[in-house]
Length: 376
Image: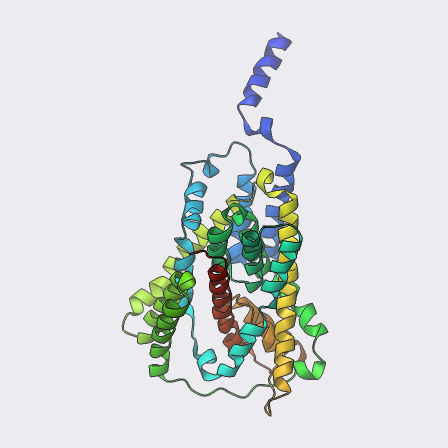
């Protein structure tokens, strides 16, 4: 009787996920739990980490149908893999974004270029670790701190690395309030952090409307490999600035963006299955991503300090770290670090200039990389 019961129980267990559960699943479930903890307890980008963390947990429960063909997580990933989701994210971001800080103070655009040293450091590091040139290019773009661009480039160059690169890009973006401040403080003096910026000039409505049109033409003319992303960014911004399609602009910035964020975070988290994720390549990619963010932050700050050697009216070097393309996370970090030393030093508006320029810097870097590698 006991033997029959044990046989029945064993057969029953074989039909459940427990029979296939291994220590790797437990590790990744813990990783998902940490992400949710950081989102809830620490407030680190909850819009990203809650969805990624939860879907990471579910993806590591053996037997879950959600990640199998026909499951919801599977179809969410298809939206990313087919490059439908990244342009829609840019569309929503464009509808939410005021480019006035960049238009009003164009010299800060230089910081959007200076803060991209991390891309090339990570690329070189990946090549030295034995990755192919295409794989190294995809890994390097993590340093731009632009999640949709990282996904776009990875699909073009090394689609088999999409889980690791997308997770590294979005996780580090969410953790920028931890990663950037130590680097910023190390490279600046307290007096430099206290520098106040003069109020920028008023940008006209004509300039705001002309900007997305002109940029759209330039990008499609000179950087066609990344035109789908920047074109949608500019279309969303044009909807915002013309003031005659407010319903569309609000939908893009709110309802549509919220839906796309859900799809994106679920798709990214669902790729974090232990058997695919717990590899040496993953450790190397995650490590290179961190190095890229550190170097990008540092090069942006140093770039601002170099600019100050030639400027009569000094800029706050903390703005340099905002040249990383993570909008508006990097700008908020610059602003918050400045507030630690002067409670009335509001850098957020000025920081948005290099932050938005960083989006274009990452796109241009990606376009050049695709052109050099002969990828369309």
